[in-house]
Image (tube, rainbow, N blue to C red; front, side, top):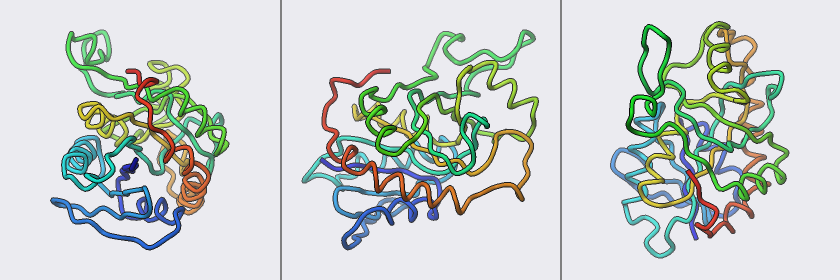
Length: 237
């Protein structure tokens, strides 16, 4: 079984591939390139849910894993966290991948797309895999929100937490990756390393280098669990 890992940008992709030994092979795709090491194909698919969905769909449909089909897709990278539950440099594995701003603004507030009577706004990764990866890496497990606009105020951070109690982090790609994986009937997981707090943007307080190092460490520890995952029986969502 092969594992497809999708990040937003090359620096995240390279942080993931550093976790794996062996020679690297590169496979060209339309508009992108897979970096292959062992059982892992790692792709920088672009920022935001639309780019992530398109890149994931292309990779899944490309035949790049024809000899050993993908058994798992992982959305990975750095992200903001609702601290102090998840401090800078820590790891989060999503037990729910939530589209936090997909819906409509109304006079009574935000309505998720499901309240409008169509679509979906959440995917649930395999619970047993979430537990195994969290145990292997020391990550916290909880909902990770996908947003198209990164939060930049305390008011917005508070509104997100009020709408999604227990959310641990936000990022921009997880739901797009999950949407493409679900249409290919492949289980999905999301792993984030915390680089900053969700809220007012203070770049001097960001710890991107620490988060990238944590991301490398996470995949080094979780690789056996990810590579060994081959069951659809625990797939929900």
